[in-house]
Image (tube, rainbow, N blue to C red; front, side):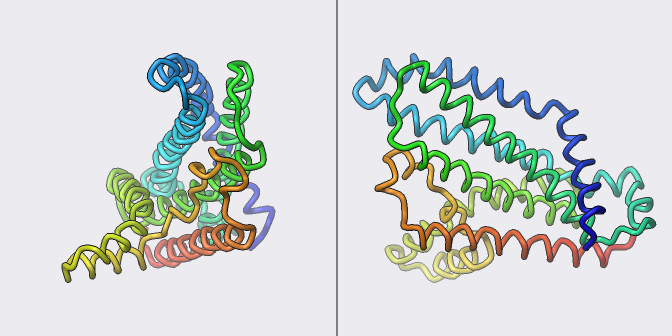
Length: 260
């Protein structure tokens, strides 16, 4: 791959996404948090700090996933529908550079989105004198959220390569929900002696990425002592990176086989 060509594709995706005012999500996030603080104080006066932390981190993920899916599923289809794919592949740009460049552009936007939301979140917590157990734990949580969103981006690009944008959107949301539940399904399989459910849960666990390995937001609420060890965190991060690379590789192979 040529770094300069990757940079050009990534910059184009980044600039186009920013022009779509996607960073207005920061404002939406701040408004929701500000309005939800009084409600949490009313219903959970004794544990409001932990609930607010949990709600804030959960809201970051929900907004991040929504932005990821709606941006990523149409990246390739838009090029095909507008016939600009012919111009791209006619230039000294190969399919892998197109896929990876678009992935990097979206990932850059998502990283800025998560960092901005975390900054707003910490500012609001400070202004409201809400204590949080560990800044380091929250930073680790933000990093793993970026890894999770990047993996979902790769899945959305893969689905967008061989399906229409609307179908890819539903498939990507399905991957997100099943990926968060696949580990629990395997545990439930030990309690439910149903052959069909057993086979289904095992197949889903093998095929669908286990997104629970990239979810440390609940642990971050209770501080560094509740976080997994450095070896586990590194292994989980490596799992997410390897799975992301695999999805991008499959997307590249499929797009290379398509006839336009």
